[in-house]
Image 1: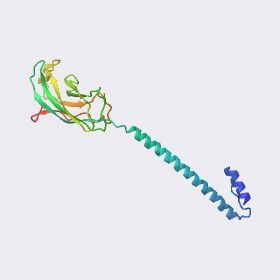
Image 2: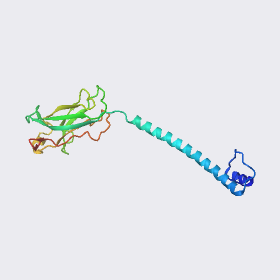
Image 3: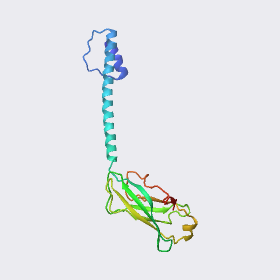
Image 4: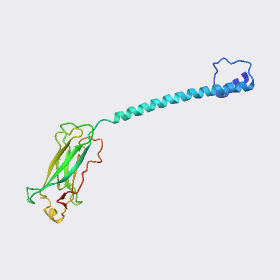
Length: 199
């Protein structure tokens, strides 16, 4: 028994602190060694479980820290409110845009996220459109309807008639001036129609 324990301890670097009976058979010595190994494995498993619990706790804490309440602005309705005169200095179109804060927080009162309505023709880009700021801030669950006028396109008047219909679309907070929980849902439906006809 002593010889077996001495050899095993030399091979593994294990120091035995238990009182070991001297009179043991070879089989009993082997069984004793196995019991020591099992005991040490159980201790290692206990340490591993403790480490896992600590790691899980840190992950849950990090996730809770990331889940900071934020607003989430979406456009729930968009359409042409009225059709004006196609003349310099006049509003050619006036659109109605309903914005809802479906998030779980509001934002600072000094910030006015814009609601922009613009012609989506590739050749026009952002040249023909208007933006109106949302004020005061929307509370969680609150909606507001905003009227957005589109003025006469003095930079390219022919575009208004030659390239009709115009695919106008509304976008809220396109400049990300308000920190939202989701920026992928800021564009509203479009293009707008008037009595079933595209504007």
